[in-house]
Length: 288
Ligand SMILES: [Zn+2]
Image 1 (cartoon, rainbow, N blue to C red):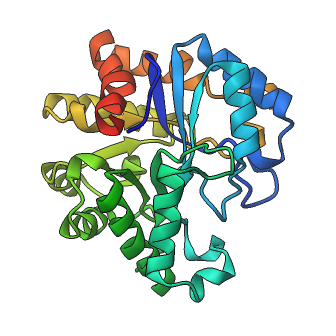
Image 2: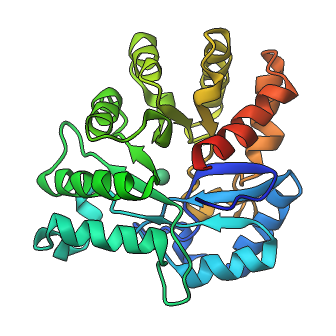
């Protein structure tokens, strides 16, 4: 069980991601510090960092930022898309991968006992998952079943969301412990409702990216989900990955969610209580 601080939680971020040039992993820690300090003033007290092994996870940076800013930074365990997996995944057994993630969730990702709080961001390539991705997913399902940890996923911006949820549910993972990511790229409403009927949570988690029209679409989506009674399964985040998107570097920054996106929700009649549900109570329930 993760100890969360009272306040808002961003469920899908990557403070040290290092997959390509310009990613946040190359950022001066003082810049990240200033960015998070601003975020703190908007009530954010927890951030789930889905930067797992192979993506640039850096426990020392997270630890330093967490203690300097007062924001609880929750690391993750697991592996992302096959392209970014360390080469030894090929030869390691499912048992070894399970053992590693269970250890990271219960003992820590470093010698000082900084424990991973979730399994993520585990991913499928399009049009279908690769052999190593299937191996990771089998392993992470077992690790989640053993520990009760939340699993957070990356569908390759396509119709994989329902198959991903079914894969995990079939292996005994409780739907309420699953977050299917990037929901704003789900192909159609019928499929979105079918996914939510399974009881899983979704992440509208790329807020600020792909332009203003996409944010308007995300806001319409939240309003529609409220009208259909699904808001208790919705989480919000930004999946901010590139230095150029930080405010200190001239981008929209993490505060965009609060200064630009929440007003779009308010325009659509979303109440303070509903915002508190998506940013506060839903994360508490899912991670609790
Ligand atoms: Zn991500």
